[in-house]
Image 1 (cartoon, rainbow, N blue to C red):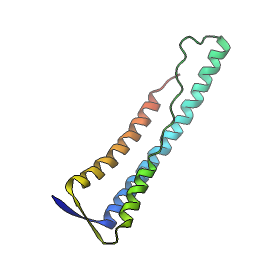
Image 2: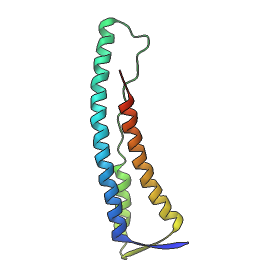
Image 3: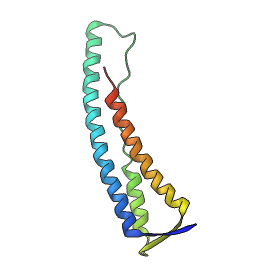
Image 4: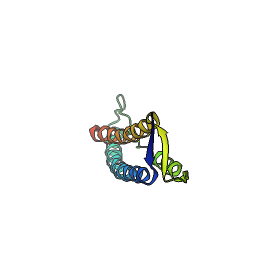
Length: 117
């Protein structure tokens, strides 16, 4: 089934999602920095004790998916008409993709927060 989407409204929705994403991404970077500092202290203790048998892995840095949002905004801006015609599966794919990126960001925050050294 084809649907008609207001281009400006859709751009604003993606921009809102991007803003929320950026806020969470910044939070994940802050948590990463703290966990990296904890890891550094953990490694220093191991170095001093000489015990390296079961060394834990360092935290993995969060990766940005900002370009996905920017690409969607760029694509929407490329349309010259005030509305965009797409089938409902395309629309669902866009919406679920944005939700998936947000969920990944939340999962990163949770995973980093759960680490202990």
